[in-house]
Image (cartoon, rainbow, N blue to C red; front, side, top):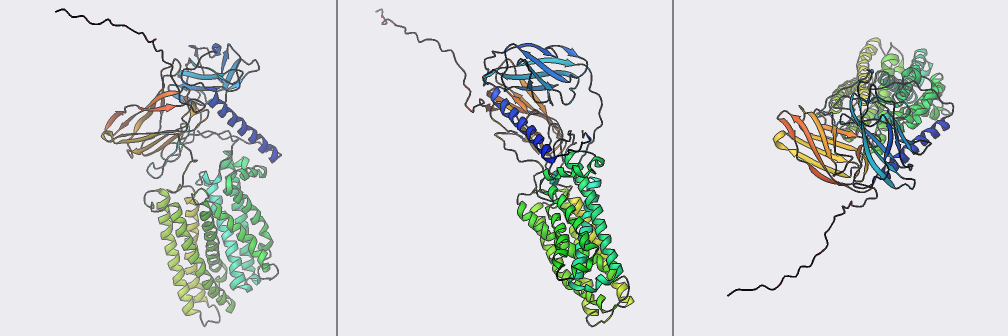
Length: 627
């Protein structure tokens, strides 16, 4: 479920960052406190529950907005609480100690479903030492009110799918919620959203045509600044770049903050892009450079003036450079960005020059300067074409490797390669014709202009199609790019059952007591998988028995449950077991349990005290014999 909230602009960005920092510090403090609060094994339950809301064993009509537990003894600062309804963990806020020092409460973020709910708690004393764990149970009688949801499904076999707290990305149905307070990395959001894709396309096209046209004018057609058609064309390209970049920045802001496009049109909200990674900062920088490019767009003669030429070409060139920061989530980010920048500059010279020739230079017959412009662009574009193809191949190797047929990203890259090949063929044919027919020409005749205009027009259309596919590619995850954050796992158990065509790896982010993240990697089967669940059995104790965690995967992929308030409550140190239940095309499978050990909060091995009877010395008299 994607919840869209209106964000109120904050007057001071420094104040907003301070608030976010305080929230992060508070969350980190809560997690660290939860790790320390839990005692190993069956800790001494010195503290006990005096009362709770809902009461232990009670039935409530609707989901409570908050869970409160009142204890007999005063609480310390390190406490934890987890809620499990119908064997599924629910999302609650960070536990807080009341002013009386005895009440532990937590906000219920998502309404609890109808059914039986178990609240598991662990508390500390005033010295910060563990002071007991336990649980209480209540029943919710009514279903939560229906809410609007937004889901997205994709092919499960294309990439590895990560599910976070019951949702997913590629491979399953995505169901996530956000309050709009956090800012995501722009390179990790779905770039296939309509406004974001359209804004990116218009921005890149406008910036490329503006820069490419100015380069052609500076290098091969200085007379172009005297043509009214050329001046209007350059100004039109700048307007397209400005409108597209404004739409791109607003849509990017809405995407990284999970707000509506309308609220993201407020320029004060664009400051959130500073927290959206290198791609977000590049989007803001592009807007600044596009606005500054008006200085040369409305006075294109500055591009041929030796005094102002460097600045006139440098400003739009910097706007093109920002395109290279669109993909920063690779293992070799520096190389990827460098190749992206070179690719963007070469592409802009190629596509921008082609569009200028098709729409302006060859709009009709003319004198010798038009011939020089076409021949000069032919020499200039040869280098641009070679650089574009070479850097494109390097990027393909970085992002896809040899997996071009096994992912949506790779297949779209192959389609893009075909279009680029057609574009290169038309370009080489046109350049060959220019070298043969315009070598000694002194003017651009009508038949010659018409023939070349058609050729360069096809090349320009192919270029626009390539740009559209490039914007589309950013919405897909390449095989060599990890779709989720890097997570370190402390425990890993593999459950393989060839008889059921099942191969599952279960990993935990921690090996000490506390709330643990969970990753379930399914390597087989590729499809026809259902009812997958992980069964955790705690050591013998009076509070925690069995934890069942459903995993919403229907085939090959991975499910991730993030650590924190949504983590698995491994609250007792000792020897645990993990098993997997699933249904495949070959039938229902229940695995044998595999063991793993959860250590004490300080990392020490849990010990069990044994009662050993005293040693008794028995004196046996000598044996006697009877003859």
